[in-house]
Length: 94
Image (cartoon, rainbow, N blue to C red; front, side, top):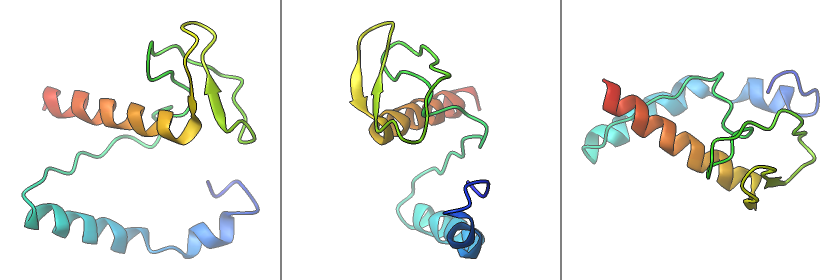
């Protein structure tokens, strides 16, 4: 995200360490497990339906359209579903 010159300053100013600390403490209060997903996981490029990887996706594309199964979904929702599935997969391995 820091490579995007429009977002770099705002993102670098953000307190990511504090956010992580607050998330960990909230998870402890509500007895929820925090399962981190690797930052290199291609959550927005994968289809949440069939897991087909779309490599020609740009930031301007706000809707994810799968060429394999025909799924059409909001890009952010698609990424969130993929992150949730990956976190569950990682939790089951541990």
